[in-house]
Length: 276
Length: 277
View (cartoon, rainbow over the protein chains, first blue to last red):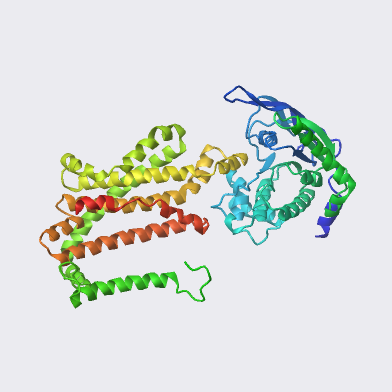
């Protein structure tokens, strides 16, 4: 565990990375409109941001602001009307699990597979040899702290454990970018806090670029290097907040004035937009 | 029933087997003691003796029935699952076909049987056709409903991991629908047995159902009950096999979900048997 603590103490500080470094992700003037009965509804307007390799970026905004849609577009699961998404300098045109791993809100594990086989699923799709599949999946389960649960089926795991399996599955192909769509949204408050710490530990060990969607203000401040605040529909980025709290983040920091100031700043945007 | 936890409860299996044993015992004792006329209920031992004595006749009849059941089962089950999967997964087909099939399901299909005997004769063909149709529609409905319960999030997750269409089918849709399909198979098999036996009882020259009717008209109760007993055993054997397969194929399901297959059971199995009385 000594090396883990060391890794946490010296987090991956972002450097001014070239836009084509493998882990960098760039959303370039992206807009999207949904067709509806009484005319087209703009959902996302001119979303433009970049995350350098190794950064922890949080997208926060009210329900229905399009933050999940945006993440699905970054995962290549949906297409935008205009604009582009670049990962490591190359555009994302469809699902590309070698560049981008995804963790969903509901853990979305396949109930007919064991924890190990769920984690190995992306490898099986690429016809990796069974022995290697098992080895890599077991490594990932160890990373997320689920040693000894390999042969359990999802319904035999708690909600937090299921999300750990989902994170392991997102990481198993070692993609430089991990997209997380409200991964802890369905968990209770205490589990959620612990999973936040777990995620930061995993992040510091793997040095992925993380783009994390949430509607929890505290979670956003606690996790992020940088917070992008989105407005209600049509979603646009109304603020970019650099979080300079030291790492590792601790529970005590949540009581510090800097923490509250950042949380209030996000809330100001969200409440302000609601009043209009 | 009781809200407070009982200190000791006999295991459910033991209770079930006790009930079976009591019923079998009553079957033996009641007619022998004179409480029930042997014409209405011949003793179990006499019924078994008849099966042993006339085993050649019963074996022939059983073979005819089994072959009819097997063919009808393959047709109804295969067709039902394929059609059900198509209707369940394609929205257009669902809109077009589902109301139609639901309506057909409500019709007592046994009224078709006289027509089928006119078209196909009173041999095995008409039984296979009738039992096949009888098992087909509920299987379509059960499979279609099951396919629709596949969580679309599974497909999104698999796509995010780079699954192509073939892999989606092979690794997500098929495993996800196995429990439904197995429940459909069980339902289909039970209905097919009902269909074959009923049609044999109505118009035929062979089969176990035919023996029931023939011996009933001459008031030979032991022979009637011998045939009934064999039908019951046949059905139980099938049900047991299917249930075992279901449990093996759906081991990953939490227990409470496995119960759902019972809800897919036919609404009223007696609807087809009634006209035979």
